[in-house]
Image 1 (cartoon, one colour):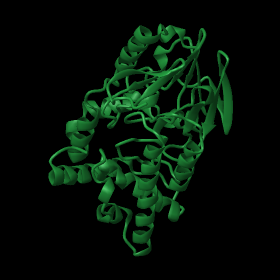
Image 2 (cartoon, rainbow, N blue to C red):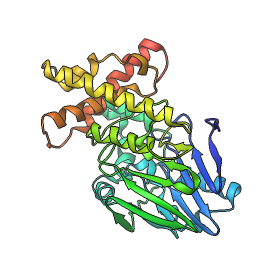
Image 3 (cartoon, one colour):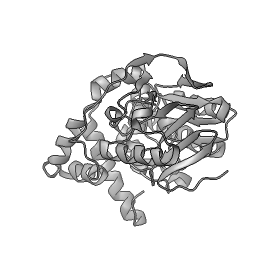
Image 4 (cartoon, rainbow, N blue to C red):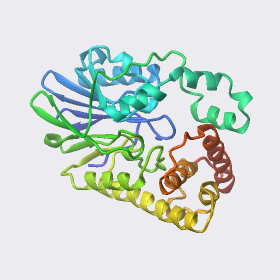
Length: 325
């Protein structure tokens, strides 16, 4: 059954709901709810507490389950657009992969984002780009809450009589990506292992792990596939995103062999059928990640420089097609 890509709660049947935020661009992530009897599991929170509170009111209206009723919250990965609302789910035990929890300790700092937004005018083109992406979010009021329970590999949790499988497939998008699979519901929540109708971004890599994660989803007996960003999809959507990753990795490796830098390669790769996907500028980070793997480069990344590259590509793409990807 196709679900429209509209903001709010979508009933997937059998006590499973998705919460979608069009159009899935930077920061506008999806979440989900799995229930059975009186028990419930929330998949991810949103990028700030205002949006998370709005989501929980909508879920309460649709399902009767409010923020204080959630027994378990699973963060699919460390990024703030899936974790910054954690504090509001006050009675839940929070579960994440060990790698994600470590990444949250290193980078889970909403105040840093608040400061960057407050000072964006002093950051030149990077600041302009950052402000465009994140100006609608309120990071200043976020109090970050870490996971209570961590795991590596796989973990099964009970929601009523349902077995829900937590499957670590990272490092890929981030260091510790987790799929949340409810076999009884034929549903999987993928976090940012899937961006549908939008461009994926490999902060961690290797891309080969991400391709294998897509294979893991494709092997599941599922009807509803809820991505981290974008509309609810099916296996054709998984294959499309997997094809992007395979294509970009192959093109980056060709250019590495030819002696181009990562930035030169990112500018040189013609996106073809993928050019219409939103946020196409993210290729700069993914190519940089591929190069780092090839070069066995574990040095600290210059995130500001990468945002500068994405800002430059974004301007070019906007000029070429007349709208933001």
